[in-house]
Image (cartoon, rainbow, N blue to C red; front, top):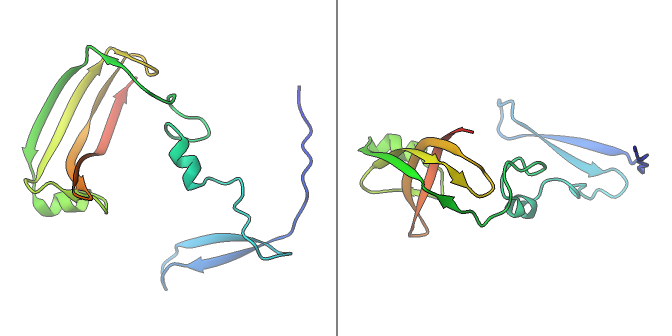
Length: 144
């Protein structure tokens, strides 16, 4: 039932780097002491993140698509907000919409492929990315 795992023991050095003087932010950079090369093999990479259907990547919350949503019910409120508050809520490289509109939505999903039935509520901010319209989900709450 259990497999015995054998590993090669290697000595590693830890290099601590401060992001800025007087700040406690530290990064750990692991290097193989024998050859000085990075030991990042097997860690989370950009490619692994992009191939995962959801997080956590080691145990995704839902499967790969495509997804089918049947008989969805929506209630969406659109409102105008303060431009500075909107800019503060939108991460770079996204650009918030010029009308300063925010959406708050409630959606009933009674039949969804891979997810089952659930209700969703959250804040969506219309934005642009490289000049193309996108929606940024700032908050999402699920009743699963």
